[in-house]
Image 1 (cartoon, protein in one colour):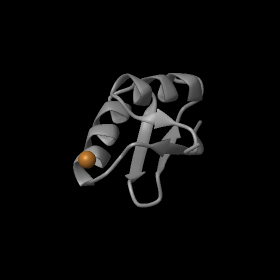
Image 2 (cartoon, rainbow, N blue to C red):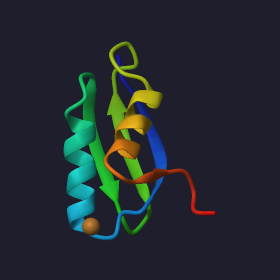
Image 3 (cartoon, rainbow, N blue to C red):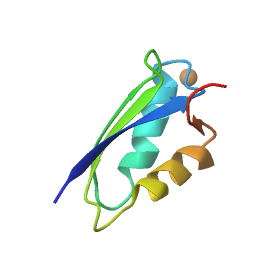
Image 4 (tube, rainbow, N blue to C red):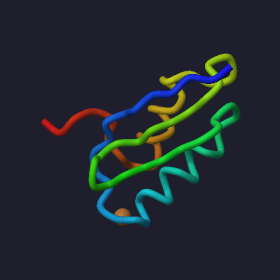
Length: 72
Ligand SMILES: [Cu+2]
């Protein structure tokens, strides 16, 4: 079982930020693939919704200092 979401994420400014997000979200159980883009301000995540929720993923991104949601 897998589903994909594309989250708007503000605050990533370089490849290092992308790596940090990919590492943190990728470490969650049930996350299969993470692609972060600071240019597009998006994080695309493929995950098993039985093991992890979109809210869990959003919480993890916020924990490491980025803002989930479009810029104001
Ligand atoms: Cu950066």
